[in-house]
Every structure is written in C-alpha cells, then in structure tokens.
Length: 157
View 1 (cartoon, rainbow, N blue to C red):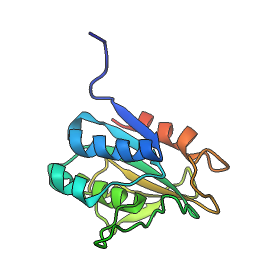
View 2: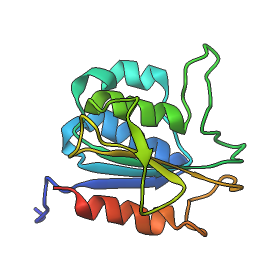
View 3: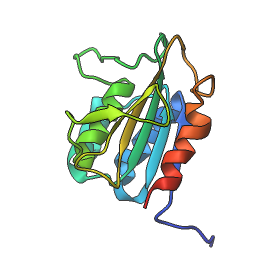
View 4: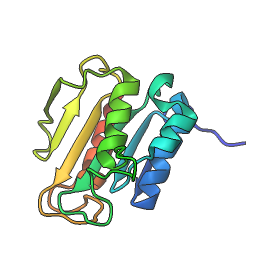
C-alpha cells in the first residue's frame, strides 16, 4: 500500500525500544538495513531462537551505552553468565556481519565511539560509551543518537 525503499529500513530505539530494535534486526535479518540503539541488549535465548549468529543480518549497527547505566548496564550478564547487555548485542552483530572482532578502530567523527568495519565494510558496527552518563539516549554532549545514527545510516551504500 505504501511507497517505501525496502533496502533502506532503519530501526532505532531507547531502553526497551533498543531491545526491540535488536530483536527486529535479529529476527528479520536482511530486511533491516541498520539499527541504532541506546541502552538495550539482546538475550541469548532470543539469539539462539532466531539463529542470529549464523544468518548474516546484513545490517549495520550503532550502539550507545552510558558508562554509569545501572538500569541496563552495557556489560550485563544473565543468570547463566551469557552476555545480554549492549555489548552482547554489539558482539552478535559483529559476528553475524562477518566483521573482524579484533579490528576495532576509533571513529573519527565522534571521540566516544569505536567502529568495526574490517571484513564488513558495507555493514559497519559502532559502539559508543557515554562517559559519566547513566541510563540515557546518547543525545547529550556527544550527540550520538541525534547525529551519529543518521551520519552512519546516510553514508551506507
């Protein structure tokens, strides 16, 4: 019914919306061109259910986490010791996109961000950590969610 660019679908969310964005990128794979999340992860059960690590999502991603986020810590583990925080969602996308996990580099446009693009140049993955920030959207001093998300998305082929 609606005219859309099916190869340019972007999903973004904050907190619970970030969890949903990660789930959509996992479950819908190549239908999602890129995601941008702030303060949200992805459970191992979901990753296993949708076989996220093996399907090749073809989605670029940018993840933001506040350094002092106690509500949704970046490095959060479930009761079995599985990574389910922002770093877990980031690492899942690095793996499923075929990026070299050991080839991170600074992202020149924003000093709080690191990027992975070796092995996955059309689907880079960025991780930004807000120094001193708590459970937030990354829209403060370093302007991650308002500017960096769009900068990454608009540069994708």
